[in-house]
Amino acid sequence: MKTATATKPIPVRDGRTDVLGVGISPVNMDLAVDTIDGWIAGQEPNYVCVTGVHGVMESQQDADLKSIHNSAGMVTPDGMPMVWLSKAAGAEAVDRVYGPDLMLAVCERSEERGYRHFFYGGGEGIADLLAKRLTERFPSLQVAGTYCPPFRPLTDSEDEELVRLLDAAKPDIVWVGLSTPKQERFMADHVGRIKAPVLIGVGAAFDFHAGLKKQAPAWMQRSGLEWLFRLATEPKRLWRRYLTNNPRFVALVFAQKLGLRSFNQL
Image (cartoon, rainbow, N blue to C red; front, side, top):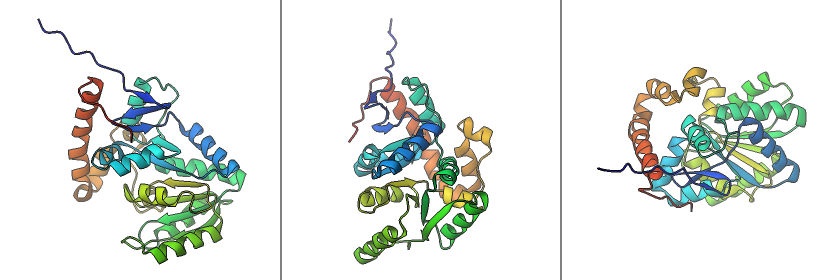
């Protein structure tokens, strides 16, 4: 008679749920925004990774990216799998902190706190359009500036000029919309080099709030089916990400829970 293999709880390290070696912060939207408030008040340089299955799976092939996640001031549970695994690990207060929703929540808080925002990323003109749409929604929002980078790495001189531009603009928050892993690398390279206390990588939020792409209905987001909506709207770009990464993610999580594999947090 065979005995069933006992499952093990997902590890919790330094207060974060270890999902395949990436530490997910035990936060909800209110906690995330309050944390950002604290960094701005204390002028503490930090960056936020907004991470779901895609970011976790990219980190399996990229040790530097995993280290960047685990060095972040906060890694928010962007997808519902991160929420479910965090709750299973005992983080009862955790809830989804989705990049586009985080942007709106911080902008709303900023109207009363007077935070200055800089929008870095997106295709040509998108950052300007995003800033316009957000100030229409939040009339008191202070936009410190926008910058659309070229579709190539910045030269050393261009990067130095960007740092000077950001410091002259004096933002409290730099929103980075470059997609994963480019935005995570940008934040890790620039945190502490620029005077802005907070950098937040939000990827597709630039396109969503600029009105260029549609978001999944709320019921699909809450049920963990947002990936299906995005696959249906951008099949050529996203099919490999979802149809390869998602099944592999499920298999690796089961391997972690069964104790068949361990994943180091770098």
